[in-house]
Image (cartoon, rainbow, N blue to C red; front, side, top):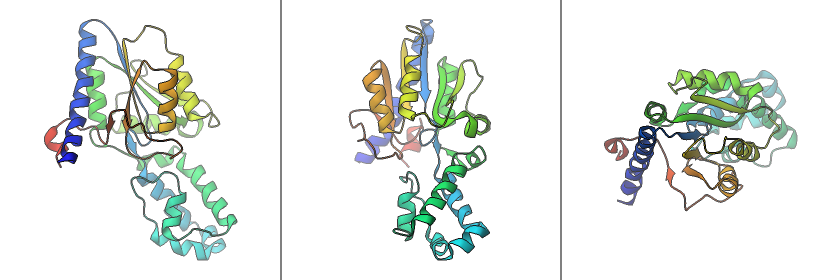
Length: 257
């Protein structure tokens, strides 16, 4: 019964935001809704799985690490996985030599953070439709991501459009880091700080990473944050006092499933 109440809360929360945006529009006021991408709008677990399985298919890796490659048949990606360490440990690769660990990590960084790999991402249930509904109600939409322009800019735009997310470069914009070296939390915090004062009567931010959430709450208390409870780095505690959601479905019948 507790799970049912939690799932019902999703629809109530999301519909409240829709209603507030419509009310702002009726008063000629403006609302802004900001969405993170990875593990907020998009489930990245299939991308992670594909990169690791592709690593095991490379002939050079098979000849260089024959013992370790055998363990890749045990690879299993869980929804709460963040990064690759726990996945490799779970497959039986804990404690294998540093040369292998360095190689698989370099491969993961190169291929996971790439335009091409984004084709494996899937939106969380209801995400495109919910964002569409906010845009139709009059909200400005920003996709604020820790992805960087050089490695992931082209693919980010391509697959937002592919999945039906609104993106017109005017009222709906994609904001990426100009360089991969920037720290995500500071980049996002500074972006919120760059917004014109008094332009928006209300700002919402959907985000899965507690590190980012805690910094933005501290520096920008005017932003209403909704915690998307998927996966995160584990470098900070989850914000238990914030509303949290697992999906973007509005229909209560769907939420009961």
